[in-house]
Image (cartoon, rainbow, N blue to C red; front, top):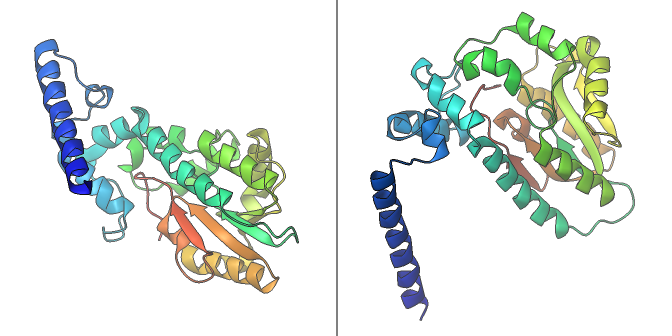
Length: 258
């Protein structure tokens, strides 16, 4: 019966695909993603994006120049938001099954940039990562304190706080330069009630993101915190030691932090 059920499901999928193909060819209608620069011509870039997201691409400095319109279509055409929300839904399902001890030591770790708050508006100007990283321009952008919340993550944050978890925000932003503006930006976007915002101090400059974040997590674990989950848009947010019971990678094809 299981085999028959699977066959029926596959037949329905095939019929649906044939219907959609016929409908599209007769009406001239295409999915919104295609009309924004996606479609068959984006296939190589979609493959590159997938490989980058699962960390199968060697450390890269920029998005391939020929993928500018395709990555832009992904970010602005709706799929990026759908992907973010899908990952958050998986996190929420996991959260619901965690037995919170109530002793104040059940913890979660969230990254900040392009996890809690978004830099998409900045990266639009930088051709969605096709241009090399510009530390001066990014500093200027970040100092405006105008990064909007990633809404699905903001909802996750609220859920974690209401469920009794201690939430630690760990970011590679420089403490001396960005501490105050980051606090204000986060608060303005609804990230209020976290246990601590940890930025990179002068003593941590020169360390890789993996080394820096591993050390910050080690200190939390040594203080007795149980890290149930760790969320970030970069693999360097989730690699190293003391990563927690589960890690969750959010999509970000615009830049890579080693």
